[in-house]
Amino acid sequence: MIKVGIIGPANIPKISKLTGKPADFFLDKGDKIGKILAEIGCELWVNSDKGMLAKIARSYKKNNGRKLVILYPGKGEPWPKDHAELYRKYADEIRKEPNWFWSNYNVVSIPDLCICAGLSAGGLSELAYIKWNYSLKCGNLKKLIAIKELLRDSKLPPEIEFDIQKILIYINKTEELKELLEKLSK
Image (cartoon, rainbow, N blue to C red):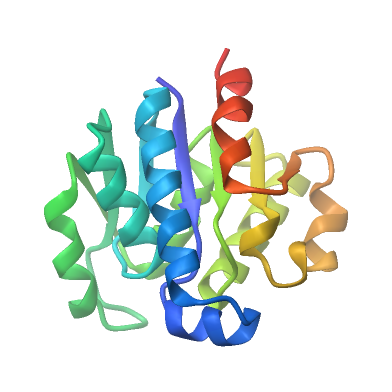
């Protein structure tokens, strides 16, 4: 079973303001992504957080997703973790990481594929981990799929994009995800 990690914004009102797109646009796309991932039968890996991550995870479970792995920091360091407790209830498996750094690193290092469902400060750090893993031949990630309609300016930061061109796949719309994932999982 293919493992798919998700990175994306936790703060939907903020990303809505930054992109000029309504919050419902992102929430609807999160629902679609979760449904597609359930339909293709992948194992879904997400950090325990709100926003797109929670929306995608809930949709995945609602649509009978096979296995949801939630990465959860064992210690609230360097940032608090109380807000993340709520999302653990959706998990088929809770992967307890030492702290937030390891949660953010492993969501993009252990899965086979990762989907970027929008940008955020945390997502930028995860993209940097992808870049360093690729450059240094570390981690398991084979492809990063970035959904243009969910990204500010429809692209990743050039400092990241330049170094990961060989593993980066852009799609224009969320609806293109299923066909691409079916091809990649063969």
